[in-house]
Length: 274
Ligand SMILES: [Zn+2]
Image 1 (cartoon, rainbow, N blue to C red):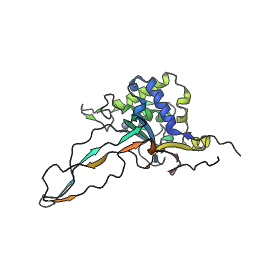
Image 2: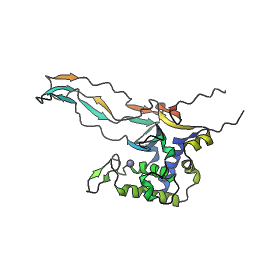
Image 3: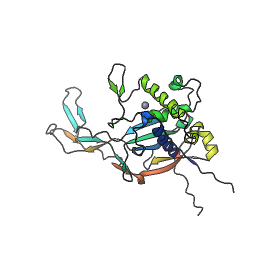
Image 4: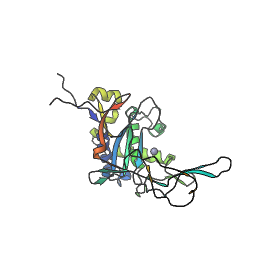
């Protein structure tokens, strides 16, 4: 019988790296790592799309509102939904209320390289895996130091956008990456980023990561019916809202470790050797 090396738990490695980044990079020093939970989503390496995303769980509940339908010709209100608010789900790990989730798209993230990246201009002559370290710092940099959601990003015209990145954002991130490396961190903190997915598979025999029980779903804003507020539309048909398809509260019971493959992610086979 061969000796089985333990599979690599990728989100555990990312979490350890986050703690080290926050401890060493002053620009990220305001982050309390216990406010942040790292989890994985599935995405093929060849498909285009995000490598990672920062999700904020502290956005306030929206003002009440409703959907409505109008007659195309007369413009008259014909139907409306029940009133509802949009809320962030709660994620609690033990006593800790999580404020931010950072999702990593696997195995795509593992195969990220500087080669075709718009980040390349900030990393001339650098090793390709730095693209991954850049992404980790990038997502953490989205956390707002004022604790009000996602960092507001100044557009060229001076207005703010939480969605787009001005050149200054990429520049700041690249600076924080080199600042981190200049502090001589323990290489075991980031060495796992040097390997692409195939190399990790060979080395560790498999890649595990934290996911939510309702994978491929994960905690996302949801709508909740509220009492009707106005007599308006009392004479039109009211469409009931669909029941929310996901929990309002997630706990550690909702976290499951899945194994990620090139084409899928699934629960690992239980080892019944005992
Ligand atoms: Zn971003």
